[in-house]
Image (cartoon, rainbow, N blue to C red; front, side, top):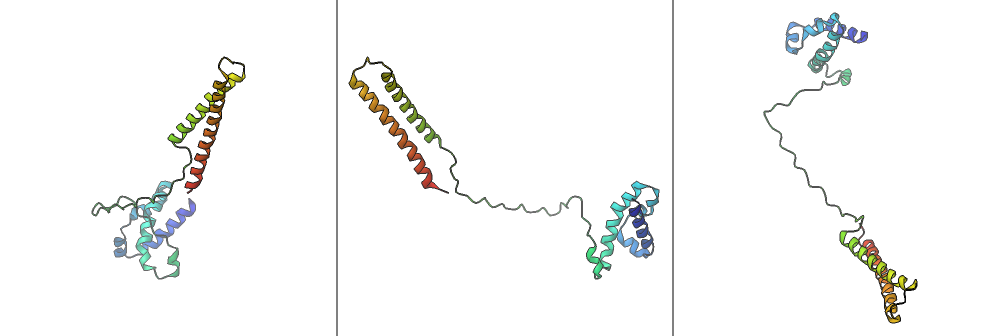
Length: 171
């Protein structure tokens, strides 16, 4: 705080050397700069309000000096003037990318569930006979065993079909 107060005091001393016409032209709250001895709040107020205006007002006079490269332009604050509304920027639609399929579709899931259910039902019927239920004729059990085998093969074909269709589609 002490260093800031010293810098503002040096600025106040240098500002006293300006002519009355230059002081009027700068549009700076000079009273804030004169009041830095009254306390910490006044120092901060002068640092925020007066310093940027003095620097921006005097920068054109020292623009050609090499040291002027180190002057920081003050940031303009506040709202923009409502005189000329800006045209809304036209956003380009995002480029369409080829989507890679990460999961199974609803039809594929339903088909897979159906094949699995058919295989499970055929297996259960065949295993029931193996456990000792021989009430049906032998030809019926051969048919059930063949149906279970066909269901297993159908499930394998369906799964292979899913894998090959996924590997061919690629990104």
